[in-house]
Image 1 (cartoon, rainbow, N blue to C red):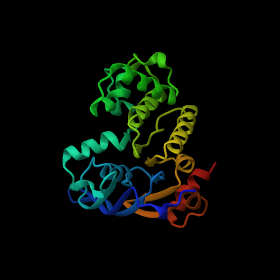
Image 2: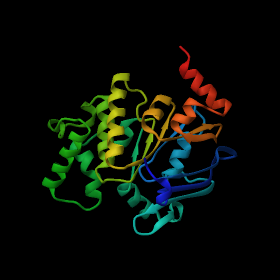
Image 3: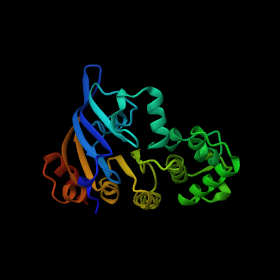
Image 4: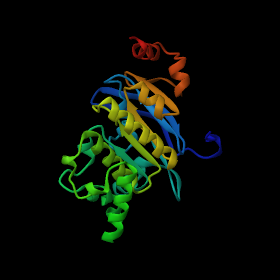
Length: 262
């Protein structure tokens, strides 16, 4: 069991709000994320969960609040106080981002091997043999045959594309990965295989993750903690099993009961 009190948070979100014009879609969200912890953000479409994910991942500038990340050498730093170049470097090293549509997170016109090794090249690695060797290692870790290393992603199934996107993100050994509905649109059997792989990798790498999902089964399998959003607000937060087994807020109760209904 992780002793969260024994170490500083990996990320701290304070009073975060996001607006589009006069419409506030995320309102006053605060939470700490700890090293190795997986947090699921759940709620129906339009609840603000993806906007929140994009704001904490520096993909959408919030209208108010703060997002700080524990840099390896400098401790907690406000990410929106960094330069754009610093945030880009953070996104290439200590962060990963897995899109719902794998094509949004891959370069579809280059090989699987080039996709996986691109982040390493962005960090200055140039030895072709070493890059290829590391790409093969990661293809195997996400259960893609090394024989597919020179194939382009458009020849892959949806599940394989998603696994390729995960390999592309994890090759730099990040400490935090953001995932936006990573299993959405996949067949049930493919989802199960992907979820099992994700659970194994997060545990092996002590990888923290923030996962947006509408699927409570995904949250239960992957996340230690859950945040339930409704109309841009966090209406309930707690340990995943506790929230799902004994929901307190009427909206959470409705979500859970809708899943349990035959």
